[in-house]
Image (cartoon, rainbow, N blue to C red; front, top):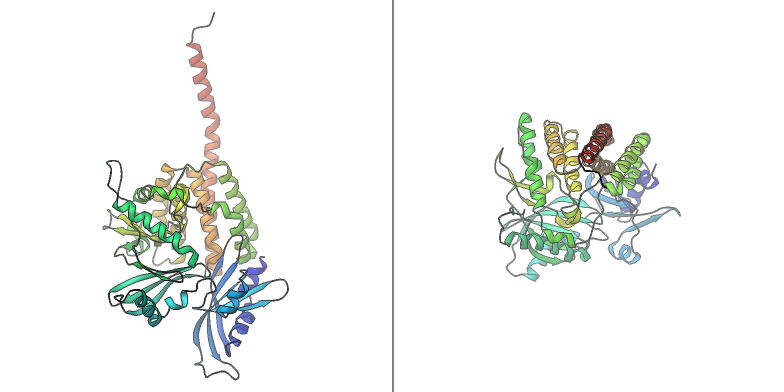
Length: 450
């Protein structure tokens, strides 16, 4: 079992949280693991939902007040730890850093982005006509990496993207590529490219303000569709069309390894989460790696890099939905289209286990995607790479039972890849015989040389 994951998700994690709160003279009440973020080959970070109560000699604190704490094994610079008030704990073998949200050691803008008054002041210091921020909702938070918040303002809703300050330029470049592609004249052979949210402002410290878009996500569209119609929520070929229309200059950006390329790292994190299923996880990963190594992934093209149902915005009604825009374009860059298709397939495949009452018919859509995507790319590699995507999700499952269910989903996708591989291996000798017979027949019709 991975020792870092064991430490941060096991009983000893409570001692870490208690020590972190004691610095501020409050005591730990209840706590539970909210989410595990395991970055391949690097750190493990865990978010905790906790309640706090008054500590000895501390200020009077309401009993049961909810808080969010984060612990990570990341190696953080000493000056950052000291300046940001991060607690460093070590036992000689493992060093762990713990902090209380909205502090984040590598996202200095997060605290401002989580404070409506501070955010308004920052925005208006750069633009006197900026709106008043009325309220904030945290949408997503990946410790040390990024956060997304919805801001309600006097001019309507906007979104805040908080990233490391040194990533702002790269992120703006990616958004600009969509803006340029959207404004370019259309040729007869081209289809309309998907849009991306417009950047309204950069507030410093890694805070970008993005325009809200009116379209619904694919996830929302599936959820609002009756069970028997969920397989028809969208034509998978429309998803493929949107990928083909991504800004082509994205191939000039930095390459990012796909999930299948990092399957060994994800497997180690998965074993840390489900040590009792280590044999199954290792067998799954080895089979994925074996298949991926011998299957052609196709040419390098522009890829989204995180193409799944929550990042795809749609227009139109049932039966005629089209992709209007994509979100989270941080990962836009060169890659293989099969990995974007595998990302969508893998995420759709776990939806029913995640919320069976909301996505009871999504399995039919998964089948349609496998069929349509398999016509556009290698169907064996697609299934194996989809299994790798699900494997990457397993360490972050909110519950052990869900992690077990996702392991089964990954195994089912892999079984589909192996079944198709067996069919191809049986067909191969027959194909070679037919090719040889054709070669003999052709040779018989050639006049002998003198």
